[in-house]
Amino acid sequence: MDKDKLINFIINRQGKIIGAIIGFITGLFLLTLGFFKTLILLACSMAGYYIGKKIDNKEDIIEYIERLLNTHGKK
Image (cartoon, rainbow, N blue to C red):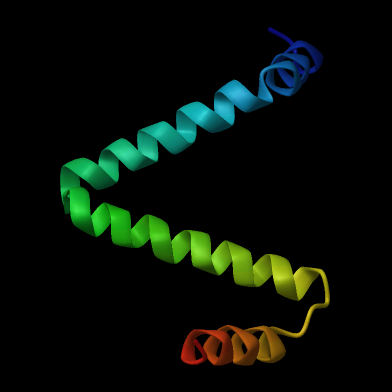
């Protein structure tokens, strides 16, 4: 298989390849860490992604956190 065919193969199946890698890594974590530690790891990863997305979009993280903490204190 030449280089162009390999690149085309990867580009046309990007979602499947990424999904398989994520599934494999999740399976490894489940086997080595256990279910609940894997859930905590996934939750921390999702929170990190969310905060990173806010930073990439030039949003004010401190303002968001203050708003989040203030809304939970008021009822």
